[in-house]
Length: 128
Image (tube, rainbow, N blue to C red; front, top):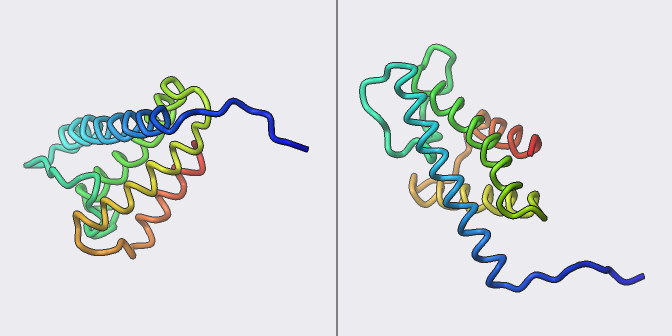
């Protein structure tokens, strides 16, 4: 039994992936800046999408901002990915997540080993 589907050329996939990455990081910074304002933190941290070293505690406002930003970004970007690529949303979402983990490791010069970060990331990936 052969697979019958529409083949998509590599340029279209690459363009859609770049578009999804742009959507993801744009949303992350927009949602992060709103959360920083809502939690009334003193200064905006430009490393918000990549920061996994903040001490995970309910009383730590910076950690809560990072967590809420991550969760809201994945929810909103999943909706926008569906509107943009229309097919294979899971493929793009998973690829964006893997690229995000790689970029996070490069920016922080360390592989994230904090289980709370992975739990939040995995929970949002599963909800897409």
